[in-house]
Image (tube, one colour):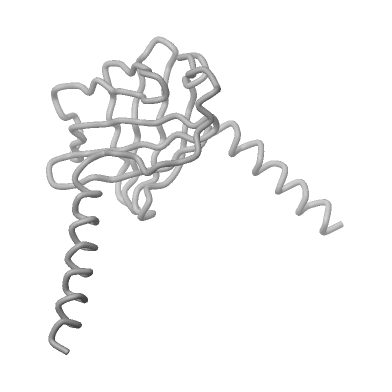
Length: 159
């Protein structure tokens, strides 16, 4: 009888340790990726990307320019918008590495930013002292086009 609670405690400890390990780094969860496709070019990734953080508290807009410049804009809940410009972004395979400005320019400080490109989706990891936030972003043009199709469909169905 006394071993049953110990086993439950071990399971709980392992689960907590696993969650803690996941929150320490910016490792992205494994996702299906077609490795036969060639890595993307800067032109393919350069775009405006929008989406939400995994906990739905941060709305993000990431503008990536072909010349490697860009800006990340973050709206936390309903507070003011924070703009985090970066010096440059580079592709290493499907991973996007960002070189952030050394001086924080907003009340929100992001010390590390990485991304992973999946075609029409981009996973973003934002890190600062004491917090890590993941966001899933989609090409704004794709979202806008899909939204228009849905709205047209709803309009036609109400006629």
